Structure formats: C-alpha cells, structure tokens
Image (cartoon, rainbow, N blue to C red; front, side, top):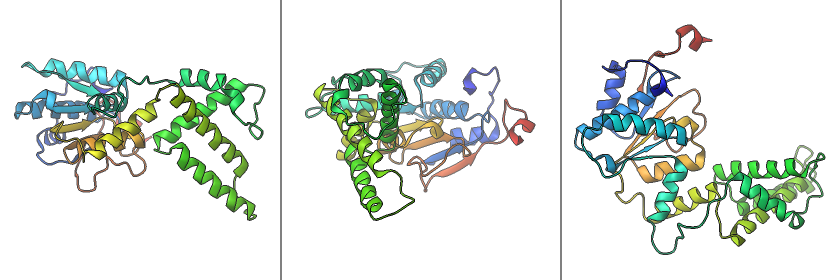
Length: 296
C-alpha cells in the first residue's frame, strides 16, 4: 500500500488536493500504481471530518483486512478529536454489520463458513454428489476444492445455484440440437447439481458462506431503499480489487454519497462503483515507481 511507503505527501500535490476538497459526489479518483490514490482518499476522509462530518458517519471500504488495518492506523493518527466508532471495513464485514442491524427476520448469529470448512462439509457429503462426468484425476480432494473455488467465483458475480442450473439446462437444450461448439452440457448440469447440494448442506448446517453474507445484506439494503442515512459518505479504496457482489453492496449502501479510488487499467468491466454521473479526477505520474517502469 502507498501508506506503507516512506514518502512525504504533505503538502498534497495539486491533483490530490483537488480530490480532497472536491464538493461533488459521486467522485472517482483514478490513477496507476503509486500515484497516491490511497493517501488521497485517506486525506479526503480527514478533510470531510474537518468540514464537520463526524468520523462515525463515514464508511471507509477496502478489499482486504490487511489494507483496512493499515488505513485505520493512518486515519486514527489524523483524528485529533474523539469519535464513537471508526468504520474501516471489508465488504464482508460491511455485510455482517448490515445484517446485525437488520432486526427481526435476519439471523446475524448464523455462522459463516470459510472455504476449508465447506470443503470438509462437501467431502463428508460426497455420497450425495453424482460425479460421473468429472475427472477425479486421482484426487477427490483436488476436485472438491475446485468446486468450492468455482462456487465462490460464481457468488462473487451474484450467480446463485438456481440461476446457474437454469443456464445449464438451456445449454443442454442447445447442445441436444447439435450445436457442435457448445461446451459439455452434461458436465455443467452435473456441476449445477454439486452447487445445489453445496447450498443444501449449508442450509442444513444453519450456516452461510461469505457470498451468502453479501447477498443477504444486499437484499436488506435494497428492501429498505438504500442505506437509510446510515452513512453521510462512503469512501472505497482500490475499487479495482472489488468483485461484482462487493461493489454492488458498496454502491447500494452509498447511493450517490460515494468517493472511489481505482486504477483505471486494472478496473475492468462495468463495476457498479463506476457511477456514470461522477466527477472524475485523474492523478498524475507515480510517486514511487520510475516513469520508465510505468511505460514498460
């Protein structure tokens, strides 16, 4: 992270200062590696506090816990007055917070199982899986671990088991019509059943995975028409590292009260955080990477 680099960015450079003081939201701060995106968005947080926003009325989102810890430490150093709480979170932690505050009808204490726990769950229930078309390659463990990774990728793109099964069935219908270029529809139907069993095992255990947590939180936020005034400003760092599900939740919580920092080269696809109405500010040359390295 930029905050880990021994650079002096105070006073801020002109482009950074413009991003910190900009009164327009949504705001996109774009720049390549080392241009000061993280430092800028952290400084904007401090600037919003100086202009009267309470720290606990803002949400700072990062793609990982390590980055959240680093930004939290920087922000805490810059806050001269007391505050109730500092919300520097990952998307999964935001989802948990949304569900904790949701009230009746949502169980915030439902355990969240990680990949290793779900692998063990799937291995224990392997007799419920029909695996005639998948190649074990001498290792059932490798195959099941691959299933878990694929399920996680699908959930990261907001594709549930039922939606995937419908796609596999349509694929099978086109394949039976003689489409030579179609993938092995039988293989996809078989995986769709694996996905269904995975979800069934989670339900029987009274548990969720991280993808479920974000999906359920997104439902809650949408049902109440947005964040409901929970945060006056939402700042998202390294948005290019947010998957579709995480980005969708962040945008649903933020609405238009959004500041996003991202690398435009790495930020591929139509992320919900790319607000078309946003003011866009571009940071200049890297502060830590020689220009010839960027060109290469």
